[in-house]
Structures are given as structure tokens and as C-alpha cells.
Image 1 (cartoon, rainbow, N blue to C red):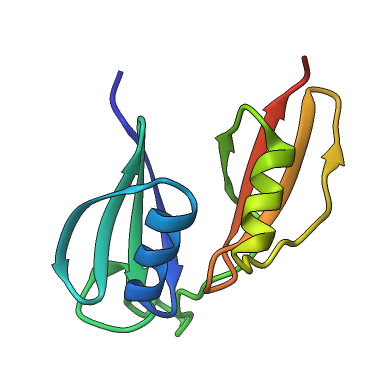
Image 2: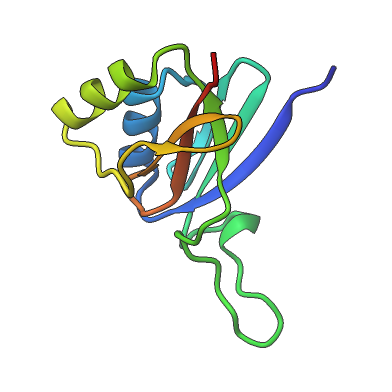
Amino acid sequence: MAKSSVRYIVNDVDTAVSFYTKQLDFHLDLRPDPTFAILSRGDLQLFLSATSGPGGGSQTLPGGRRPEPGGWNRFVLIVDNLEREVERLRSAGVALRSDVIVGVGGTQILLDDPSGNPVELFEYRK
């Protein structure tokens, strides 16, 4: 099966690379320019594009709309022990959007990357 890829627009690629590699166990795969990086975790690739620069992810769209970080769409990382991950992230000063949420399939928490893009950590119901 091919990897799935998600592009996040970030304010600072260096800060985002540091966050995803140190806090969420991503691996840096490619860094061809200061305004772009490709990271991976398992079968998920994360394309990080700066809000400015020569790359396609930062280009102004017809009508003048510019890509920007944030919103509510997100990718989900499956974890074995959500409580432990939440404690670790809080200790590291990571911005959490929510407390632990109990849903129908398990528990989850939303956190923000340094640019305000959401990431969901999810633990299946046991």
C-alpha cells in the first residue's frame, strides 16, 4: 500500500520539523529548501510548506486567497496509551486544544503544532 500524504502550511518550517520529530516521532525524509520539508511516520508522509517562498504550497490562489495554517481538519496518530502521551506532551509544553475526549470508538485529544495546525492522538477503546 502506498503512503498517504498530508500537507500542512506552517509559519516556520524549522520549528515545525523540530516539533514533529521531537514530540511526535516523525522522521525527516527530505529538506530540499528552507521553506519545505517531508517527514514520515509509518505510512504517513507530512509535507510542511512555509507560508511564503518559491514552493507551490505557498502560492496565492486565484482570487487572492493565500494558504495559512490552522483550521480543524487534521490527521490522526494512533497511540497505545493516550494518558501517558498527554502527560509527556504537557511536560514538554505542547499546546493542547482539548482535554481527553471520550468518543464512541475510543479516547482522543487535540493538540496544536507550533503554527496552530491540529493533530489528533487517538487510543482505540479496549
